[in-house]
Image 1 (cartoon, rainbow, N blue to C red):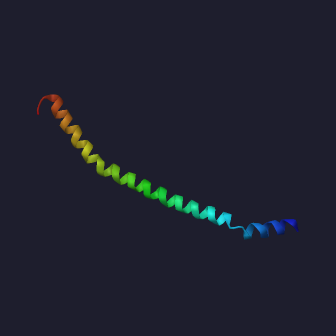
Image 2: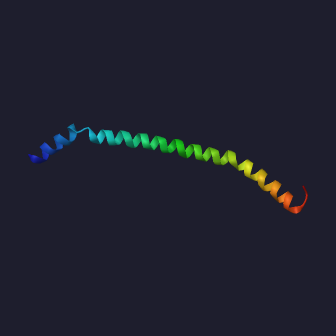
Length: 63
């Protein structure tokens, strides 16, 4: 009997739903940040390749 009362009280509680909602929002923010970092990394690669080529050329004295 006490178990049923506790179960009914837990079912009425909305704190768990709020935690789940915040968890989903946090997951979406994480995915957006991860996607942005991945995109920045792939677009930034060309810049660093160009810097590497120019540095190598300058170090060889073929400016």
